[in-house]
Each structure stands twice: as C-alpha cells, then as structure tokens.
Image 1 (spheres, helix red, strand yellow):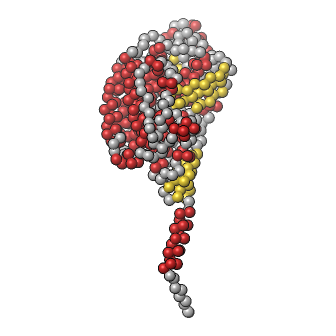
Image 2 (cartoon, helix red, strand yellow):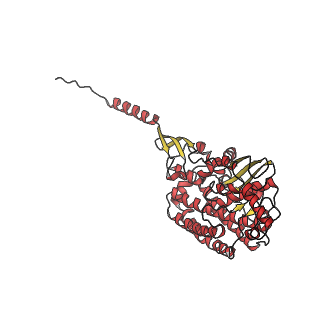
Image 3 (tube, one colour):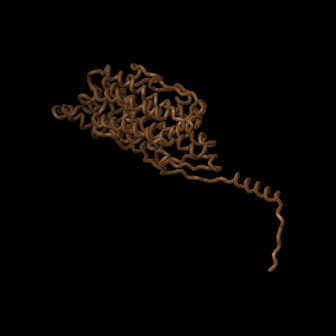
Length: 413
C-alpha cells in the first residue's frame, strides 16, 4: 500500500481556523424556555434565538393558562363572577375584586358608603404589599439571592392570616360584592393590621440590606432591561414598570377612586427604567402603602359597609333575611337572577399592584353582563419582552422576567 503526503503550511491552518470561526459565528441555536420553567413566573413559553449566550430574538408565547374568563362572565350573574377575578392576578385577589365591583357599580350608578370605601382601600393596599413582597423575594431569587425571599414570604404569611380573619380564605378571597363587601371588619382586626404595619419595616429594611447595596445584585440588575419612556408608553405599560421608566402615572392620584384623594402618599418614580429601578420602585411602594393604611385606620369611618339603598343590587344581611319577608324575597331575587344592572356600557380601571386593571362591561339590563373585556396589566407589560430581550445574555432573561413581575393567570385570562 502506498501512501502520499501533503504539505500543509501554517497559512493554510490559519485560513481554515478563520473559516471555522466564521462558521461558528454564523451559527444560531433555537432554545425553548418553558412553558413550565421556574424562571418564567407562570406558564410562559419563550422561543429564543441565541448566538452563543447572546439573545438575538425572543418571542413570548402565551395562552397555556387560557380559561375563557371573559366568556364565562357572560353566563353568570355579576356576583358569581367575583371568584373568577381572584384567579386573574392571584397574588392580589382582593384588589381584583374591588376593581371589578367598582366597574359594575359605575355602570349601575351605585355609591357605597364611606366605611365600605375605607375597607376597600385598606384591602387594596394590603394586597399591594402582599404582591410586592412576593415579587421582590422571587426577584431576589432570580438574581441568585435566596435569603430575601425568606423574609418577604414570612411577612406575606402574616398578611394571609389577616386575610383569612377578614374573608374566611387565605388565597382566593372573593370578598367584594356589587354594592359593598361580603362582611364588615371583625372586632380587633384593625388593631392587628396596625401591628403588622408597625413590624413590617423591620423586615423590609433587612431585604434592603441584603439587596439594595449588594454588589452582585447591582451588577445583575443595573443597566439590564432598560425601558425608555417612549417604549414604556408605546407598549401600554402601567404600574411600577411604567413608573420605573420615569413616567409619573398612578390612577390613585390622577383618577382617584374609593376616596384615595383623602390620603397623603407619594408616587415613587425611577430614572433609568432598568431592572434595578423596578426593584427600587416596588420597595418604596410598600412603604407608601403602609402610610395609606395607617391613615385609613386612624380615621376609620363608622356606618354601614354596604349600599343600603341599593335594594335590587346588594343582598341584605342574614339577620334581616331571617326576620323579614321583604328582605327574604330581595335576597332570593338577587341570588337567583343577580343584581339588576341597567343597560349601558362602561370602562373602569384601577391601580392594581401589577398596573392598571380595567373592566369593560356591556349590559342589556338584568343580572348577567352581555359582554365583558378585561384589560390585564401583566399582558401589556409582558408584550415589550420581544423588543427588550435581544442584546442581553441568556443569564439576564431570568432577571428581566423577575423585574417585570407579571402573572400568567392575568395574561391569559
């Protein structure tokens, strides 16, 4: 057997190496993140195109948690839909309940008494604190810090105990009714809420010590996922994500409802719109919510906790149902046919922890809505991901997702 040899020069090797490097640079890898991945805060799928560790394309795919809430609303009475609102942003069900009830009440022209308004403001701010505590704790974990989550989750469990005392449930509260709330605050509950508000700053200060000046956390979040004012507005972002980009918009200040105009609080605004700013805004929002709650408790009004004059909308208390034929019939009609809402259409949005939660309700009269559309803040906030992610490293996507603090139950509905 004869063999032949071929001389290979150093230049040939260098040229071949350059050609190979060029092929590597032009290679792209498709990567699916999700739809059940721990960094996606829910059932989200990301279709990514990577060049090494660099994200060149990121397409969010939604719909894995779609339950048809808006269509379901057309087949049940207004009060029967309250538990479904719990399942939107399931980290702040009390705030969802209130936003929905306010929408229907606006259509019906119902005004609730001051005590009811105070209760609603109180539970909304407690829901905001609960949502932000979990959001900040999980965000810390996304950036590689486990300990802050233990602090925030411990405080959130205390809140859930307060929710259980008020509503009878810890997670899905179903507390609000069209024209009022399910029940008045129990005896001693306001004092326990006040005690919680006094103790919470100690825990949040520990979180700030662990994260706010942590060199690793700052390196992971500062300058990452920057959203300009123009992009934040163009993509319909609301809530802390919008305010972190420097837009001063808070519906509690700009379009006050439920008596928010009576309370003194500040709206924290970011400057750069990056992941770090979004964290700082939520930390400060917790402090401002505590300010509001203390003012509500200090000047907590007396009177009724439901609209007593809304005879065809709010069911009377049980003691009256058991002692009066008129109230018994009223309760029967509201339960079987639903609150009688006049025909018309209305849109109302409230400042929820994730942003502006809106309900567009169309009524043809009677106890069941003809059409309903839910404006979900998480859906709009997540829509910017396709523009935001490219140019970042793969390891940054967990931090970006954590900073947007979305909930897929609200995105998919």
